Structure formats: structure tokens, C-alpha cells
Image 1 (cartoon, rainbow, N blue to C red):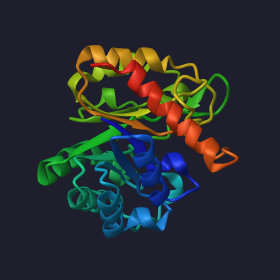
Image 2 (image 1 turned 60 degrees about the horizontal axis):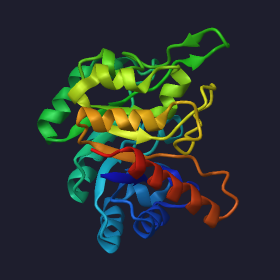
Image 3 (image 1 turned 120 degrees about the horizontal axis):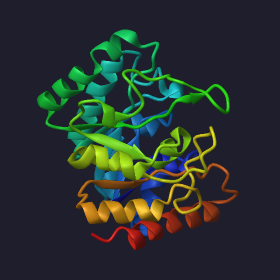
Length: 257
């Protein structure tokens, strides 16, 4: 299954994301719950899914810096609401970032809390790889607890994001190997290795996204491949569509189970 993240069409809305996904031939959509009001409304997401006859494969919980107040400020409450949306729209994965280091109480119980949520909801809470924040060219600052690399923790399910791996200067193939069957979800994108979270069209960066997809195919990966790219600089909707089309073609070309 190759899906499109609604984040890939920002600043256009979630409604536009479903429209692009349907017209270009994506198999599903991942909903990034964010500042777009539609993304926060379960009924609206369900209506979009039904209207376009496109399943929602995953719900990305609002855990970014700029979504700290979406669905309140309680991080566990955000995950519970994400699970409620996932159940309502038929998704089987909730994507979540590890806590920021200043969320110490949340972080202290995070690993066990995620396991408990999976047990109570029947959903996969796929914890995403993040990255050290670059304080200088030589030194990074750990901004996530218990850590930015989900392969080092006892999570049952994880997400690998190639743009985040680029910032961390971490091999996504090696991370996938460490995770093994626990790799449930992939954010297919790319990065140059700079300190910026670039989310390039796969193949336009330095992460050997093609080789990563071939590794997944050879290892029997059966999770979701989600295109999560940055098209904010697209001058027109046609330009955005070109990036979305190229990304889908790249995924289909290089991931052949």
C-alpha cells in the first residue's frame, strides 16, 4: 500500500490531499492532525474518505511543536483522541513522536504507556524516529526522551522517516534491520543530510531511498509506505502535482515485493 500524507500538500487542506491522492492513484491517505481544521474533525475525515473511496491507513497524532495546543495540551489525551479517530475512519496505525525532553512526566512513562494503549485500543502506535537537534556542525543536542531512535527502545511498532534519518546522519536500512518485524510504517521522503527537516521528493536527496525500498521489499515488509514530502515551495498546483506524481512513481518502481 502506497499512501499520501495530508502534510504533503500543505498549505493546501486535507480535502485537497484526498483529491490529489485519488486523481494520482495513491492507495490510501495518512491524516496529519494539525492546524488544518478539517484534519481535527473525525466526521470530516470520514466524509472525505467515503467521498473519494480512499481508505485512511494511519492517523498522525498532533505532536509537533506547532500543534502543541491542538486537541488540548495533555499528550496522553492527544493519543487517545488519535485512537478514537483511527477507529472511526478504519485506520490501523497511529503515528507518534517521542516526547520532548521538557515533557518529563510524559516521557517517564512513555514506553509502558504506548504498550498499554496498544493493548487497550488494538491499534499499532508506531513511534517515529526523530533526530538530535544540531547545536553546531560537530555536536547535537538530545531533545527527545527516552531518545530519538525507536530501535533502541522496546516499542512493538515503529515508523522510519528518511528525512529525519538524514538529519541524524543515520542509515535507514540499518535502523530497519535493527527494528526487524517491528517496522510497521514508513514515511518515504529524502534529505541531504543538512540540519533542516527537508522532506524532499524521494530520489532527490542523499539517503538512497531506492536502495531502502529494495531492502524493504526483500525483507518482506508489509506495512504502509506513506509519501510525506514538502511541497510548500511549489509555485502552482501543477508543480505540486508533479512532485506528488513523481513520488508515487518512485515508490512503485523501487518497492517490488
